[in-house]
Amino acid sequence: MAHEPGPHTLDAEAVRTWSSLALAALGRAREDIDAINVYPVADADTGTNLYLTAESADRALTEAFAAPPAHVTDGTAGTPSLSEAVRAYAHGALIGARGNSGTILAQLLRGVADVLGAEPDGRDAGPLLASALSKAAEEAYEAVAHPVEGTMLTVAGAAARAAAAAGAAAGAAAATAADVARAAYEGARAALAETPGQLAALGRAGVVDAGGCGLVAVLGALWQALSGQEPEAEPARGRAVPGPRDDRPCAEELGGPAYEVVYLLEAGEEAVGELRATLDGLGDSLVVVGGDRLWNVHVHVDDPGAAVEAGVVAGRPYRIRITHFGDERRLARAPRVQRAVVAVVQGEGLAGLCGEAGATAVLARPGEPPAVPVLLDAIRRAHAREVVLLPGAADLRVAAAAAAEQARADGVRVAVIPTRSAVQGLAALAVHDPDGSFDEDVVAMTAAAGATRYGELAVAERQSFTSAGICQAGDVLGLIDGDVAVIGAGLPETAEAVLARMLGSGGELVTLVLGPEVPDALAARLEAYVQHGHLAVDTVTYRGGRYSAPLLIGVE
Image 1 (cartoon, rainbow, N blue to C red):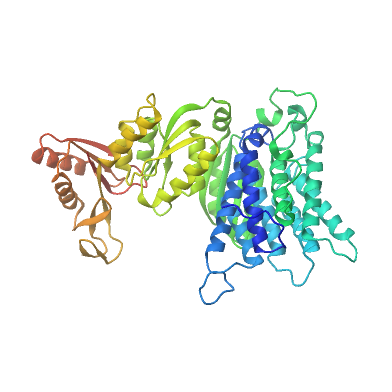
Image 2: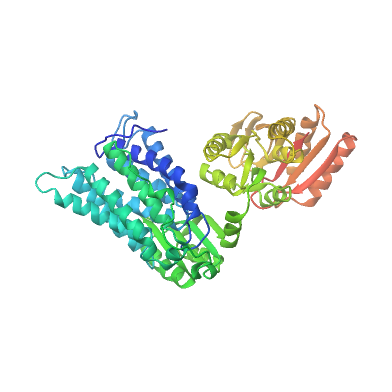
């Protein structure tokens, strides 16, 4: 949701407007920034990474405005304080930071929050904002193991110096926050124009720094939020600088580590210090940002397993993402396909099965449903003009709809088929026709999914009330179309009872998806059970693999 562009005082509403404007600006500039991404790796994703980071920050800020603020004690809703808003904004960027540029942006926002989060305390807003931008640049430089000039860091440093000068030049009449924001924006623009002369890779390519472009867009949004004036120009649109262009691959593109490793880490500061030293010896482009026991770790390495193991030694790594740069470059250079399917599945075997069927699979682990940025990233990586999205679970429909809406803003035609189980997704994939019309394909896939009843077997973790009665911990629950229909003591007997109910209204095909610890003998028993009681019904069996439920059943 967009907010009025201003002018605003330096308060929570200003932060919300800044976030909204920054996200919009990065959305407009994303493809242009991707196109000039040549350093440190020419993988054409800097604009996308900055956008996804800003999107995570904006989502956290929206949630902060929707929840009762910490300073409100009666539980009623209200506007958060400046401190609450800016800390939520920085935290959202931290947990959603993507790539080298997104990680640095997260630390810049954390630096701003470290100053503004302390509340103005009667200080003039202009000098306070200048201090926040200076702190942001300082912390960003400290977060990067080996800072390089001519990059996003250079632009941040120039913005901070310009802001400090504006704050100090006002004399008795203190500069306003808008004055300081404009100075920071103009200082960043000037620094961005100088980056090709500071970094050889940029000079050879004839472009300015991609991360710096994104930062200029963010600072322009800050000035607009505080002044109500739209920036005069947007150098963040990724324009090449004048001069000769050398299209030969630069040294940074030809060499360097093969993988990017990113993860969130819960650990203390001492352990993180040791982790920095370990990762610095494993690769390059090391950026570790955060604090208060939550960190975002980014590094380029040849041995991604060693980078993850180092995180395990330091604390608890999660949301681990490993990307091979060769795959990224091929995707950036490959032409778009006409249509693709993105399917969310719980189980590595199911993910492989969807991949064999030509779909882009998103692996969902138990208790960790993929968020909107993950789904949006999968849609983009499908690299298609038209995408059919299969969420595979009822609780993912809202996230899937949000991801689809954002992808549509990028010019991708997206249809969400409301699948509530992986077996419905398999049924939809079975009738997918990539060569037919998009509308007819979506209708056929939707009909196939809707005609598939789905069942699941799970083990009760605790005593609870269900639609089939009271279950005890350890009982086997047989669910049909999302509701508990059978409570049993063993997996085979409960599975047969579920099959009996599901086939009671007819069917032509039974699909069984076995979990990782379920023996093949169960599949043989259930196949025999179906064949004995329903001679005209066929049965197919798949292995769900790690993270899948004990048993999924589909009846078409």
